[in-house]
Length: 395
Image (cartoon, rainbow, N blue to C red; front, side):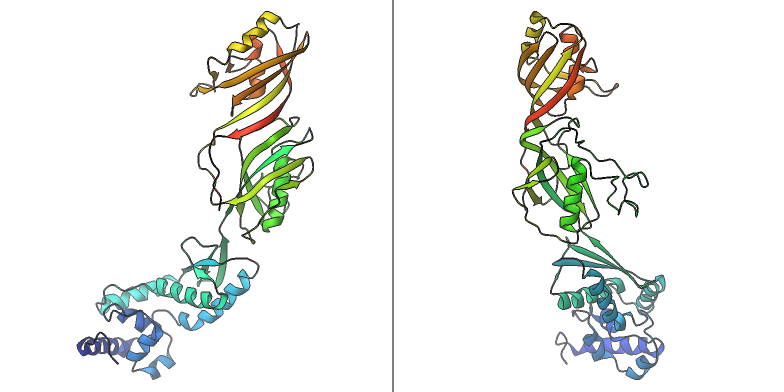
């Protein structure tokens, strides 16, 4: 046996191991780990075995440090494989929870015999589990894993976390009276419980509910969270390229999917659905082409309607209860008077403008009621086109 071509190192290491084994029983894994740094070798059972001259003692007693955890790792791997069989994955990461006495005993031996450096007992356990699991499942260890295993040696449990996925898409709404957002489960207030089968919804009778139902089924997940790019009234129609949205898929069992270019659901259609690497952290700027049907309390005056052409010159101000004033712009505007008390307005406007508040007297300045010197009501509004002013990332 040649280690670093230095018999002095081998000899001093053997003396160290002999001194430890006089009073403490150690397994080959722990011996190899403790001496690996001084010998510039990878810690392993085979390294420890070369220096273990006290096999009889080891056969009689448990390892003072690990309590023979390394001898039980095949059982742990079997448990991991059984629990992860319902997931599709190619990468993983292992973490563990040990009894405090194991780490304490490791520190005690290192301190008593002045062993400096080297990897910890927890790191070695995680490494050995990862190596064995990767070999048996033909998967790879990764810092950004599909699955993360947490092995608890205190209660012999194995918890699995599946990394969240992100999906981007657009939807058009072809039927009125479909609300955009969900009604949360009354029992758990949307957090997820047995009553709602953990998806957090009272029912699927909304745009959010239908998207949630589809993606939960496709990814075999329990819950999703949708981030909307703007919103609409339940009576609004969405046409053109559709309203964009981002979805976070929690605990997916399936990781890679391809979608049809168009998916027809109940009153809505999904377009351009695809997985992306992540979703934007900040708000996404967008513009909307909107048609608004407005009714007035008294007949509309033509000379006041002409004022509408000039509101493009200055930004709209949204006053939020003493908070910072938000400015939005109108880029195009035209109108068509259908009868003395009704007008249809077509405009291109920055996203984030509350349409009903823009029509009715409100904290939006200017608003149509003030401009037209009339009490105006927003009967209905539809979105003809929604354009995102940034790119969405693809996988």
